[in-house]
Length: 140
Image (cartoon, rainbow, N blue to C red; front, side, top):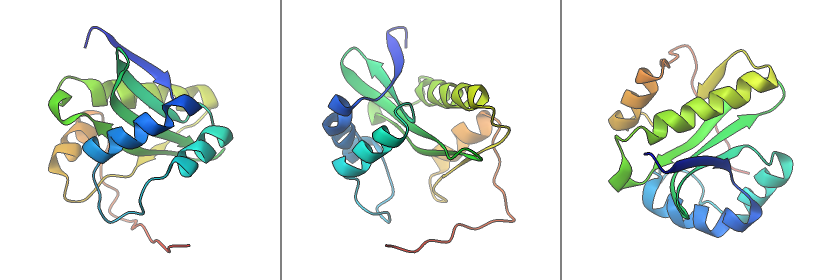
């Protein structure tokens, strides 16, 4: 992890992020990712998508969304061959630092119920399941 660099994604990264998520991200139940959606995220909040880079290769991502009131973490993904190296922890830490600078006091994370490996990193970083809430969705 010595050569790992964390940085915000830019418009030129969109295609590489999509390719990375096809390999490293999970959840077949969500709508397909699109370049247009990432471009819109970047226009609205240029620092929201954080990349972990090893040279010119993406090895991890997290979206650190801030709506001005609440903080939300999405799309934490690490290259399958690079897991358990501290990359996810570094991304979570960078996202939390971003939120603190923005004045936030609490963060939530979207985590798949059946992804036990993901549960371990979230727990290790101090997160816990909030049993009182459920996510309700409606496709548009």
